[in-house]
Image (tube, rainbow, N blue to C red):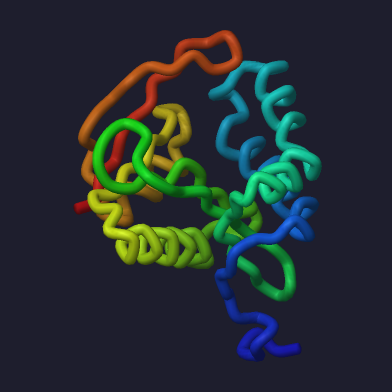
Length: 169
C-alpha cells in the first residue's frame, strides 16, 4: 500500500480493552526512550513492568480509556487526560508516541486531539507536567507553545526528580 492510502493515515479513537497489548508496547518503548538515565534503574524497569497488558485491561474494566493514535493499523501513541489534578481546567497526564514514530507529527496531532476533547468539556486552561530530565518532552511541549508556569519535585523510584508545568490558555 502507498503512504497516501487510508491505512497510512493517522487517526485517533478511544481505546478498548482489546488495545491492551498495543498500549503496553507503546508505554514500554516510550518510557525506555524518554526516561533511560532519568529515572534510576531498576525502578524504571519495575515501573514499566507494572503497566503491562493486564494493567491496561483493568483500566478499561474501570470504564476509563485512552485516546489512541493509530497508523497503518498499529497503535503508535496514546494520551490519558482529564480534569487537572492540581488546579482548574484540564490536564494531559500522559502523552507518549513510539520512539520510531518521532518526527512525523504524530505527537502533535495526538496532543491537538486531546486538547480539543478537553476544550469541548470546558476544561481550560490545559496543564502538562514533564520531568526536567525528559529533554525530548520539554522540547515537544515548548514547540507546541506551552508556557512554563511552575516547577515541583517528585519522588520517583527512590530519587527526587524535578518536573516542570506547562500551561496553555
